[in-house]
Image (tube, rainbow, N blue to C red; front, side, top):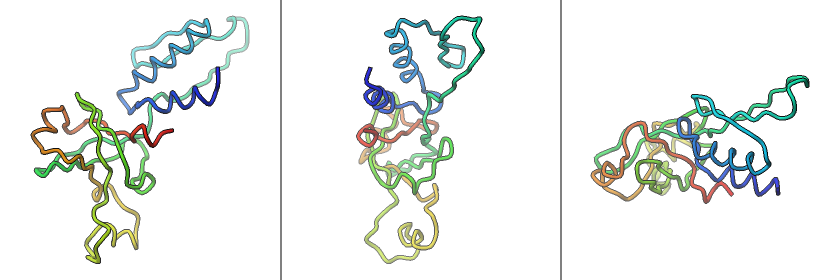
Length: 167
């Protein structure tokens, strides 16, 4: 098994908090392909026992989930206000493509607003002096509010970095 290919596969699977199932499924597939047994608990954690029970106990832990975003509200214009799930800071991501994991998976762009302005109230001019904060961040899909709602986008919907940026 190529470790780099395995890492790339696992990193490419969206797994925001509360929606780690697809990542856990992939881990289980690889564990079973190695001829090992695994199980899950009620929270979805994957357990793999290596070796016999008479050996010293060593526990290795890792997260299946990723730091992501959550929809806070949807504006009448269809722009989606997001906040962090975990310790994510918007300026660490920068502007770029994201996926909205609603009933239908949608693509959008994490946006800080227009950079072609000298308006001191704009996010880009405020960023000259301080870090961009979540209240200044939106996700733009180009879709109207009604279409976003029909796709299942609502407050609480998870938003992740688009797979194109994960490779």
